[in-house]
Image (spheres, rainbow, N blue to C red):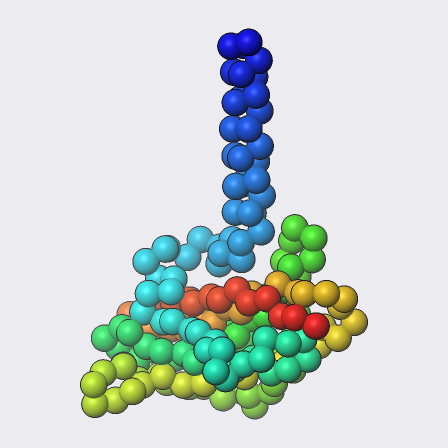
Amino acid sequence: MKSALRVMCAFWVVMLLTSCNAEEKASCKSLLGNLPPEEVNTELKINAPPSFNSFRLGDDINLFADNYSHFPIEISPDKDLKVYWLQGNSWTETKNLVDYLSAVDRISVKSDSDPGGTTYSVTIDLSKRQGAVRTCIILYGIKDPDRNRVKLASYIELTLQP
């Protein structure tokens, strides 16, 4: 009886660890490469407030980007705003249909006197997809672009409903 219980417990531990690893592999955090953790979702943060988004396939996704560093952050949204969707267990890059005309934004430091930040829109064509689609949006930026040029990133995972 005790050996059957041990086998059953071992089976559940293996299943739990396997499911945790599968979820970890599906996280879009892996798309950030070797960017140090302290440079991700700390000084540059994006969010998609529900009050500005429907989270429906085909609708725009409105993002707010905020600068919590002590330096300006430079962003070229045409190349620094990346969009992915989860296909099976792997992320597939898709094009943001919003053209920012090669603009370069400088996001000021968020403070009591300056709200800082900026907004970006993401439009992706996943209309042929059936059911909910898990997406990942990554925004890269350069902190202190005039001196040290430290690369930052922020990401957000969203599920879009039909």
